[in-house]
Amino acid sequence: MSALSGGEPDGAAGTAAAGGDAAEIAAAVEGELRLMDPAVRGSRALAGALLDPEFVEVSASGRRWTYEEMLAALPGMAGGAEHGPRYEPSDVTGAVLAPGLVHLTYETVIEGLRAHRSSLWRRRPGYSALRLYYHQATPVPGERDQP
Image 1: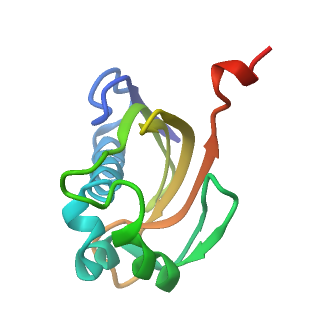
Image 2: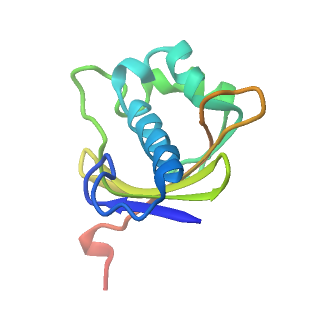
Image 3: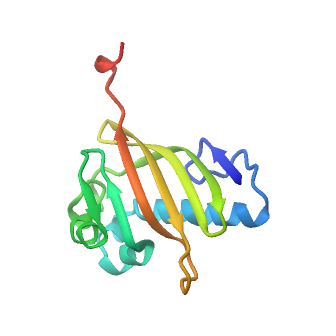
């Protein structure tokens, strides 16, 4: 297992991954960042090319989303408007768990709301690129909620 981490959204800092693993992690990070782009969120074709057909997400609200549900809802979700608020990712870390399987963790902020995020990107037989297979977001409590 190889890992890459860094405080920058592109995960470029502090690489510990070997050449091929670093490329896999970089591809997953690129895909993750593209899914935060309003132009991608608003396009079923662009977003669909990044999601695995068996995609599942458990959102920060606790809702479970499937591939079709996510593609239908994505344009109207937070971060989907060209001139609206955008996700601000930080502390992106990636690890290759097995050939063609990358795990990413990071934090996002949008409209003052923070969430820890975890994604699994996989390459299925017959696909040339990694696709997002699983994503989970966990809300970070506000300062008033912390001891």
